[in-house]
Structures are given as C-alpha cells and as structure tokens.
Image 1 (cartoon, rainbow, N blue to C red):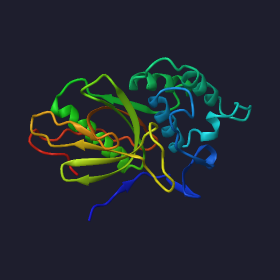
Image 2 (cartoon, rainbow, N blue to C red; image 1 turned 135 degrees about the vertical axis):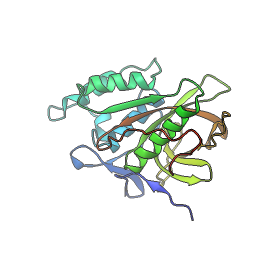
Image 3 (cartoon, one colour; image 1 turned 90 degrees about the vertical axis):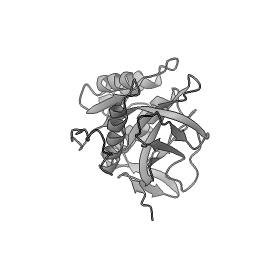
Image 4 (cartoon, rainbow, N blue to C red; image 1 turned 30 degrees about the vertical axis):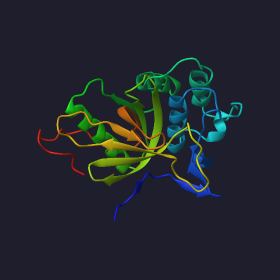
Amino acid sequence: MQTINVIDNVLFKDGILHALGREEKETMVFLKRGDLVGKCAVYSLMIMLIFHKRINREDLFSKVNSEAPPYIKELKKQFLLRTKREYSMRSLRDKLLLSFNNHIHVDVFSISNLIEDEHRKLHFMIKEHLDAGWPVQIGFSFPRGKVVHSVVAIGYTRYGRILRLFCLDSAFDLEYTSIWNNIIDINMDYDGLLKLDYNHNVGVEVHVNSILLINDKLDLPFEPEEQDSILPF
C-alpha cells in the first residue's frame, strides 16, 4: 500500500481547500490564472505565502488598510502591479526579501546543467521540505519548447523510482473537495543518463530544474550520498 504524505496547514471548509493564514485566520488557498494579474510564478508564490501564514487570500484582492502588516502593501507593489515580465526563482526571492525587509528565510536552488549530483540534491531538498510539512514551489521547463511553468507541491508518494508530487497548478481549475490539481513525476533513476520528469495534466515530459523554499522551521544541511548510492527514501 502506498502512503500519500501531505503538508501541514491543509484544511477543508465546505469542500473547498483552506489553510490558516496570517493571524491564524481561515482563508482559501487556491489561485487560478486570471484571479490576479501576473504570471504563474507569482500565483505559486502567493499560495506559498498563504500556507506559511504570511498572508490571507483576501489580502490580495482588498485595499491595504492601516492594520495590515507593511509587507502586504509592498508585496502587491512588487508582484501584482507588474505583469509584463517572467520571473526566475532568484528574482522572486529577491523581490520577496525586499517586500519583507529581509525578515523571511527563503532559499532557491536551480539546476543549470545535467550533473547527476545536482539532480540528487534537488530531489533530496524537495522531499526533505515536504516531510517537514511545508510546500515547495517547483519550476520546470518543457524541453521541446521555450515554455516554463511553476506550481506548488503540497504532497508526495513513492512509486518505484518515481517521486510523485501532488501540486497546485494555477493553469487549471481546482475541483470541489480536491487538495491538488496536477501531478508531477520526478524521475530518480540515476544511471548517468538524463531522465526527464513528467507532467500528468498535459501528458508531456518536463525538466524540473528549480525550487523555491520558505524556511520557517527547517534548517538541515544537505549531506551528499556516496557516488553509487541512492537517496535515503
């Protein structure tokens, strides 16, 4: 029997996905393309911030009042008033740090080559963070084109050599009573050959090559495995 591991701070209310946002208030989580201005990376980042109790979904749609934390206004300025550019994970991190005046711990890890150890580290970090109960913002590309996309992983299971990630994807609807709306398979068959990952919603191979992590509790260094071993899970 396979076990599905889901992050903390997942709630259901009237069949709709919620979380405890800032000030421990129940708030809806999901954002679909068109709900806000901006690109998929911004949508994913806002979902991350909701799960991390930094914002409520309502903050993104209402005027900032005097009782709201100052970073709410800055977040909207940095991310929701600029619609013409794509964001790399690093630029997301830089603007997030600016919005919070550096009072947030955010890490980015990207793969720029096909080195096996880099893939191992990326996969280790994804699972480690999900095991700690926190979401992971995933960035991936479509090798046969120039399109890139970003989703939020909120759970996983092991399926042979596959780390199957259950994700919130702003490009699709989130059905009633559903926790996720896309599945990304991470290929962990390390045999020296490039093995692509797989996006189930569109049925194509992709390359997961970057992640953004917000670290509220987790601060464990990655320890590389021996050259001929596999990850410890």
